[in-house]
Image 1: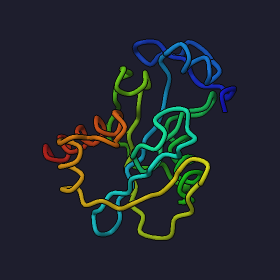
Image 2: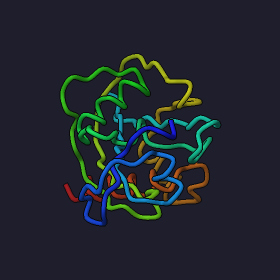
Image 3: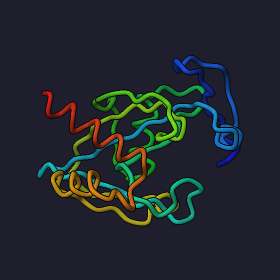
Image 4: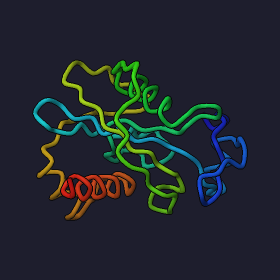
Length: 170
């Protein structure tokens, strides 16, 4: 996993070149990632509890699915791949793009494309990535994110707050 090739990018998300994941994380270099918010027919959102074996944010609650954009891959293709790899949710079409976050300390120096998907069927969790998943009512999640936020990744908190502001703006 540490030797997978990622995009190292500049402050404007311009490509510098390929870099090993371990180097990118070890040096705190800017890179690309996707996060997917999966909602069900009841408008609940699925969160995953990251595996305790993960090297970043182990055991914390995070977006439904997320991952690094691999070298040679687009943001859109990565979102479809991660949805399948982490949750077993197949998708042949691009997901609904919502917004982009700039790389910052809060995102782990990742430029993040955030997507939305709707799925109410079965999930096949990747147990190497995820300890558990749970559906949350958005109001319940608002209280957690805007309250203590304990147990949530910093990137998820930023993503959820941004999502709710954009949703309210219509």
